Length: 186
Image (tube, rainbow, N blue to C red; front, side, top):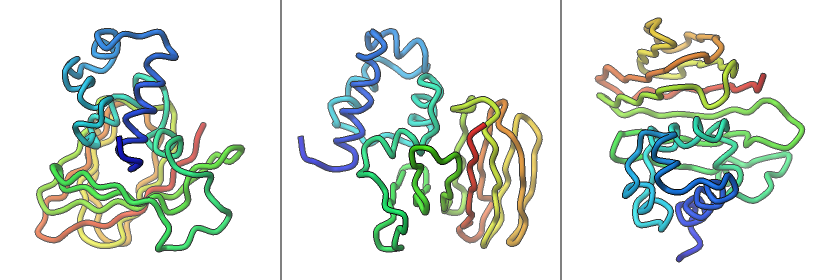
């Protein structure tokens, strides 16, 4: 298996499942994801989508950033733009940049997201209940639904909330939407 982010992510997902004593069937029950998809993910035969990572993180009670940080090197105090971890979900038109990666002992981080026109990303449940988020739209338009409360955000708008239920990020177009998410652990 090549030493890529996807390969390290696949290995870490398998380690987390085994550490909990879960079979693939158990994990499928916790996530609603088929056993075969989970198996292919753990063998790094497929790249995970944002929604799939969201379901895994919910099952483990982790943020997506924590899971991704588990497979990345210890972040330095200054993270140069060229060195920021970038993850793409081309199937759903989503790009995620870890601007300030999570770090042991710190509760906050900054993430940049870009959604292509028409992109629609939903998360069934929060990875950590009560997780605080500030979503600041840098360019474009974003329709964000937080626990069934819809919000229409334009460039410059900032939405602050705590995650208690499902969320959905939609770019109604016609241009890509670029936004920053400030995450604060409870």
